[in-house]
Image 1 (cartoon, helix red, strand yellow):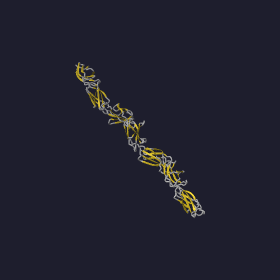
Image 2 (cartoon, rainbow, N blue to C red):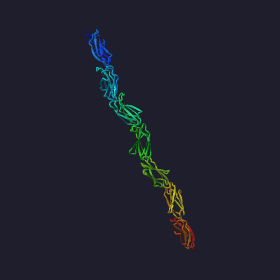
Image 3 (cartoon, rainbow, N blue to C red):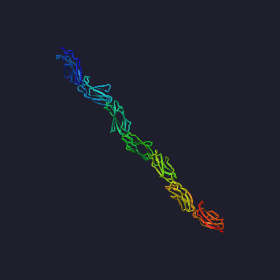
Image 4 (spheres, rainbow, N blue to C red):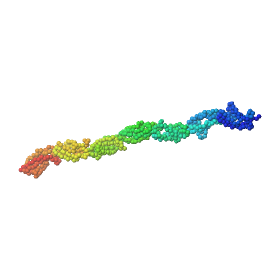
Length: 609
């Protein structure tokens, strides 16, 4: 008996644990079909009257030898066995663990159940994929682009080198590279700009973070720069810039830079000066300060000092000199500086030296002095008598003050002043009286032993008067605070040179001396007698008076006829008289100039008949 025909080539589909078969019946009749399969071990046999079957409970990734044949109705006559191999699909790998750096992605996974001949890895960044095979459960994908997202698939391959398990597909991103050339610019008290160069490879944005150790800030930017604001002055900030990939969860290595904000500007300083130093006090700016920088100069080489205090004394300065001074705060890096607060201050000029007063008149005086040490641009000369005040600015070291009142004390101060006219040195003072005025022409009355004087006060003030007189010998001097005086105990008939002048309140400054001469009256002649009387003549004789006289005026009269003669002797013979007539004879001593007569002495005598 002939056996059943051979089945047509079956169609096969597999998964990890079964193989599904479909085939066509052979020509002729078939009672049932016999299926046998094994993976090299004991075979399994099943019978079916259908033209399909599912071999189940198989081992993934395993090659099975399968045979299918028809069986005739006697249940023993078999057709030719159609034998072939089929491989179950390997299982899917376990979830891989992934670690990345900038240029590689490292993978580790667990083997699936069943058997695996090798593993297929495929990855791409959107371009042409790369494929590698490995028989290990780990792999390193290298030579990748930093900051790039890769789609990766890993699947097992069966021993037939073509049956593949389900592909486990996922994405992983290489870490971005570190940004380059990070720098900080445009530093102010409350902001700074950080800039950097784009890293190699890819990144989608940059995470900028900053902190001063207390306050922290962060921002994501797509540009390669960021201006950070609302910072505290004079504080150090640690700034980190990190390149981040598209999905925002993969950060590259951070690049860091430290930078202080500029300290704030100091408050307006209070300034006090003397001749050789300038003292400064200021308030600290907002924020933090490490120290302060002070710089000053007078137009030459500057001097610079540092201090951690809010005050300073600039010493060894030149008197009367304008200094440009700047003060600014310095941050803790010892180089970041705040805005320089610049101003000018002037040392006080030194006091003028050797102040003297000369050329004193009734209405003016000249004051002179020596230039002080250091600098000054002009001198302020001020004067006052307590009522009237005057002032003038001069550049010379002398000043003639006019329009003063005679005999008055003036307080004169000279002050060196700097260029801007607002900084005065210590004043030097001197007191001086103007000369009193000259007295008016005195009225004079004399007698034989005294001269009485009356005069008018000069304009201005007078403390007292000085009187001096002499007759050619040693002078006598007296002082009085009255406008009259009597010079007594004088010699009769003597010419006196007299001077009267006003004296000021300092008891030494004198007005112009009004000098004149006055003559005391001569004394009366003594012992006048008449002798040698004749009809036409008589001789008169007398004794010289006390004191001085220069000649004698002899006068005679009979009531009708009068005669006179000046003689220097103490006698005179009068002739050409009329006989028997009474004559009145007077003798008067007269001084040198002939205008001052003493009291006359008289005698009456008749001529003979």
